[in-house]
Length: 331
Ligand SMILES: [Zn+2]
Image 1 (cartoon, rainbow, N blue to C red):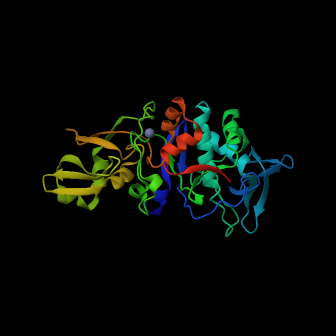
Image 2 (cartoon, rainbow, N blue to C red):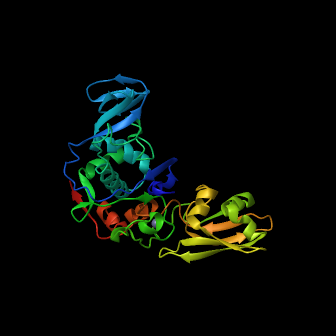
């Protein structure tokens, strides 16, 4: 996924699919999130003002104010960071989860948005998975709003700047290095850690079927060089245990295909993660794949945070586990 690999699918937990994009630590936190406002591009829908602090957009209630971006017809909402987070955190993690895990999620969401300011265009964020899902006040819940309030102004820091953040639903036993997942410079706090705290996820271990036609399309123009497929094996595991390549062996020869390409072509619903332990070719031509985890596995493991919270870890301790060497600070 070219550079958009930095937009990586995470898990559907509680029915919502979230996405996170790591951002870079070049920006020094300068403005308190207590006063900083975000500009969110909502779209070309209909706006009705409720009062000075709230409005309706396409029938949904939003905090802040709305204005039309000149020359575009697009509605941009201006909303204080902390009020924006009330809605976002409730979409990123189930409200019923332990408050410490919700607090860790709130700190991550804040760290992300504080780095999205973009003075070169008329908005900072979009309200979708390309940034973080934002659907206004009706998504808010007392538990997630309490987590935002309890961590007000706190962000994840590395050195003098913000940490790059990423998260996914369930790492399956070991988080992934950002450099392995997306290339780029290795980051000391995103090199991967062991995690068995996510065992309660139904995706901690899984068995999936990749059908024969998907396997053929994975091979692409190498299909003829392989011939009749006889077996598939895994090759070159990285430090987290994720195989970098799948080896297809057939009657005519072998082909080596990047595991990330196999997953992209098969689809992330068919292969929920790259942490695959075995691939067995069936007489039908389908492949039975056993694996672990849901999502890219980089950074924060949401189900792991839930497990760590149950062992007594607070939000900062949970983040220190998944981002070693970082610290939580108030901006
Ligand atoms: Zn985990």
